[in-house]
Length: 90
Image 1 (cartoon, helix red, strand yellow):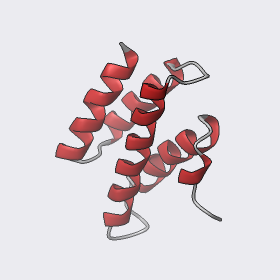
Image 2 (cartoon, one colour; image 1 turned 30 degrees about the vertical axis):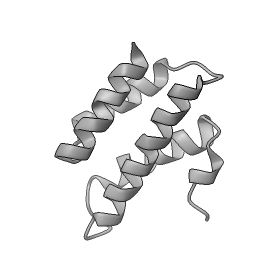
Image 3 (cartoon, helix red, strand yellow; image 1 turned 60 degrees about the horizontal axis):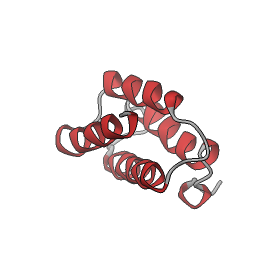
Image 4 (cartoon, one colour; image 1 turned 90 degrees about the horizontal axis):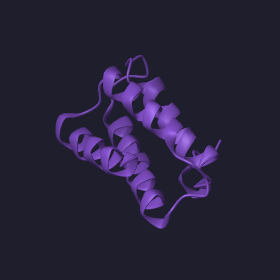
């Protein structure tokens, strides 16, 4: 059920863009996932990280309030859920 809700929110994110409220939803949903991930959950999280990275790339300034929550979601997927190839290389 959680994975279905995550997929719904990813579709919503791609259509409407990112809001702080949606970021809180993603954070809450990610906290409910258990490791090890199923292949479907892994795919969903990778889609989430890619969508966040695409939105982050479209931000016009570093002062945009969406930057920090987008970075957090990307970092959680990459580091906590072991999708290191999606991590920022710094």
